[in-house]
Image (cartoon, rainbow over all chains, first blue to last red; front, side, top):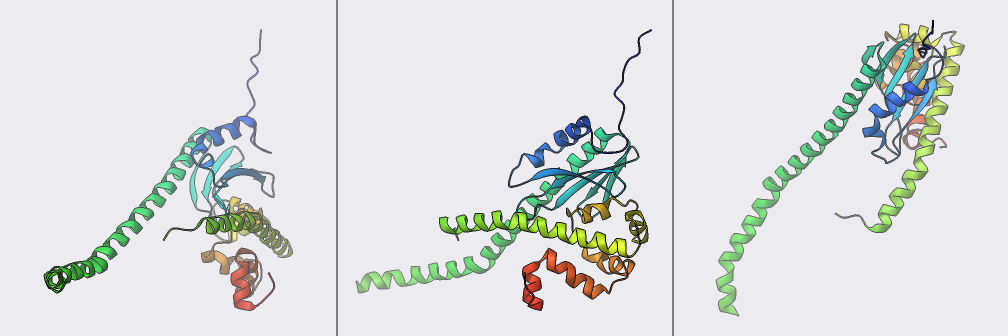
Length: 148
Length: 109
C-alpha cells in the first residue's frame, strides 16, 4: 500500500511559500505598480502570521493586512476594518485583489471629480471674463483700425 | 503650473529621505504602544476585546509599525491603557506627524 504525502496545511507560525505565493499573485497589480509599494510579513504576539500590503512612498503605510489565526484567514484594511474572513486563502486573496482594485477605482473617481470641479470653475469664472474681453475687442477693433 | 526639473529632483530627494523615517517613527510608536500595553497588564487579545474589535490582528498591525492608531478610537485606546487621552494623542503625534508636533508644541523632532 502506498501513502500519498499530502502537504500539511500550516495553521500556526510563519507563512508557507505556497501561502505567500497565493497572496503575492493576487496582489501583484498593486505591488507591481511601483513607487515604493511592496509587502512585508510579521507576527502577532501569539505567533500568528500577518501579511501587509504597503502603500506608496513616502508613507508606505499598510493598505491591506491578511492574518492567519488558527487556520482562518482574516482580511483587514489599514484602519482595522474587517473586510473578509474565510478558511480558504485563495478566496481571501480574491477579496484582497477586489479591495485593491476598488481602492484604485476610488482614486480614479477622486481624480475625475477634481477634474470636473476645475472645469466647472473655469467654465463659471474664467470663460465669462474671456467672453467679455472678446466682446470688447470686437467693439474696439474697428476703432483701433480706424485710428491706426 | 508645470514643475521645474529641480523641483522634481528635490521632491524625489525629500520623498526618499522621508520614507524610511516615516516607517521608522511608526515602528517606534508601535514599540511605545506595546510597552504601555504591557504596563497596563493587557495582551493584544485583551485590548482588542476592550476596544470592541472582533480580532486582535489590528493591534498587532499597529504595534508592528505598519498602521497608525485611528483618530476615532484614540481616546478609547488611551483609556484602556490607563493614559490621559490628550497626552496619549500628543505623544503619538510626535511619531506620526513630527513636523506638526514641532509646530504645535515646539519640541525637537
